[in-house]
Length: 218
Image (cartoon, helix red, strand yellow):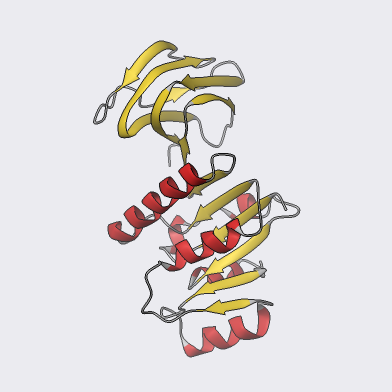
């Protein structure tokens, strides 16, 4: 199994486009709480549904029960968020990439919880790509080393932020604004809105955790 797509129950306008969701030929879909209905309403029957399902109606629960082949329902009184439970389940399937959508917009505490969950799990599983996506953005944590990014017309801009501590010796090649052994300090906006210029970009740094955001204009 290569790719897992998790759809959570955030504001529906934040869900990534159908073109993106349907671009995978063999993706494993997991619906989280009301995100399960978002997938069903888009013509995608998730392989699994996970959560406490406290945000859906009785009629919606009936539909989920009838259509989704595997459901894991939890008590609302639990330590993990529904999205975290879905990610943990996804990790047990040993994917190479996990996409999360429906986790931005709406309540900021939910967004922060999801972002920090992704941060923690990315550190624990450095070989795995975990990405948060919505209609206009793709967020991903980068660990020290060298990374290659392919130009994507859907996400024209690339921005880099230090997460937790400074990012050291940041070197960017194949972008509009190249850098060599720079430091990204926590709180700076200097590394915002770069662009890939040569088809493929190279990103390397030696220390720190970098939050990369690829975006497009609405």
